Length: 230
Image (cartoon, rainbow, N blue to C red; front, side, top):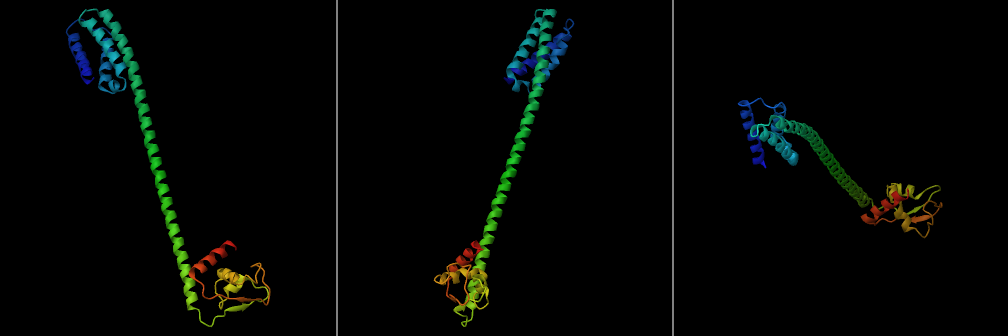
């Protein structure tokens, strides 16, 4: 294909030399020849090979009539037709180049947008992982703190408590001599289910057992139950 186009350029050059040494050149040749040569040097052969081949054949037919048969009039008709084809092909090449450039720009924009979305998704996933790690660390610290407080409790802490008027389980649990933590009230509730039908309704004079030797897991579960039922 490249050899064919180089051959066509050679024909144009030879034709120009011969035209300079012979009779006056047909008027349409001087218009058609630069266009044909210019299109051959650019993207026309690659973008529109059939159309460009047809253009060359039309121009070469004119060259044959002009240089071989000396038919200036007949050659000028082919030169005129070649000029018209060249103008149409040139316009089509320009439109195609603009379209291809726009499509390339759109593809680049889409790739950039996709990369940005992927980056945002990765950042969100990393943020969620950090948040979960922080929450787990805080839960572990809170459980350790509860366990430490329980271990440090003096042995004289009461193992029973008498309900006063208007008191609630969280209030009892929050008392210093009990648990000093209102969220541990479910431990008292579970140990006294035989007396407590509704954890929100207590009666003055009730005597509750206050568990002391409960595990860390029980404390964590009590906190979770308390948060759900607040």
